[in-house]
Length: 135
Image (tube, one colour):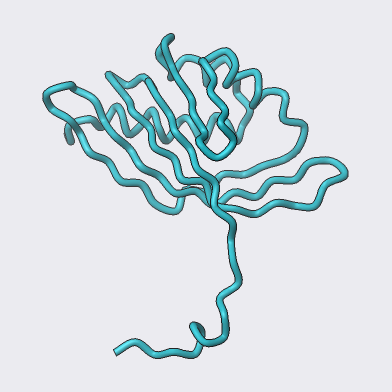
């Protein structure tokens, strides 16, 4: 078994439970001292605030994992996980939003301790990039 495998599972559960809006189960995968930070919007939240914000979202959204990178710190018994997600979000009376979410998660003993997130816009590939050939 890979070191920190239980930590990777916690991060996978996070996005699945958010997609499924399973709030009680979601709360179980966090430690009580959980901290969330989004530098772009300057949002800082504790666990209860993070759950409340996601619970109050009145639209439809889907998180699709593009890639994840895991590093286990054997001295601290923690995992640092970096993930990239493709997100489609639709709220009533608003245009559909499509973007990427880059998530930095620290997991300790299968519980999420800290999360920092960035959002990145999708872009159309310019024609000069579509037509170039790599050597």
